[in-house]
Image 1 (cartoon, helix red, strand yellow):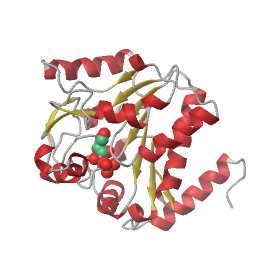
Image 2 (cartoon, rainbow, N blue to C red):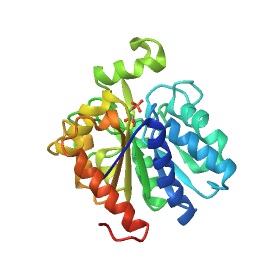
Image 3 (tube, rainbow, N blue to C red):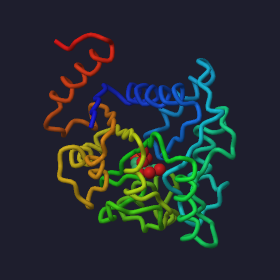
Length: 264
Ligand code: F6R
């Protein structure tokens, strides 16, 4: 894992947007996996700015979102489809038909999960998966105890996730208790993963993910098995990592190599 620790959430967003932009410039027809939630919003704002001001085009990009609440129509303000339209898609030049979010209102929910997986495969797989992390260590809606080989499926949300997400709905009672989510196995098949975390409330989950054992109790820890993961954290989210100074040294050396200098 490449662990990058930045001073604040804004710098996290700049680094994350740069990783996405590098791929989109190198491979304009790439497939991006996207996340919702508070964490990636600043990254999406930076990508919108790059689209407007720096000619970063998404015209040939395809996207797949990680998850969607069951029962919410795409135009429900708290649906993840509506979130993505509001926070990113409506502001960049991506064709609507290139954007995919699981259908939380499908009549055949299980069949629609299988079709989502098949479509990802058909379009060549995900090149870069953007991820946030829940305070319980979940990625997408793979709650503690999810199989590390899981595929896109229905998942019941834990009380902790329902409480965390109540801030978007007003009350806990309004938060759907069921979601469609890509599985941990689906995520691990992405060619590259970009995990973002900001704030003290994520510090325990981040420590468990990076320095703890690989366990289904912290589904993000499965990323330790992936060969190309970049984790971008602010200082608060990194605050419980034991090996912080080592990650900073490695990062300094890595940047020197990328700049064409040999690390001292
Ligand atoms: C959302 C998702 C979730 C969030 C996580 C953190 O698509 O997959 O795993 O990334 O719950 O949410 P925030 O960023 O709101 O703290």
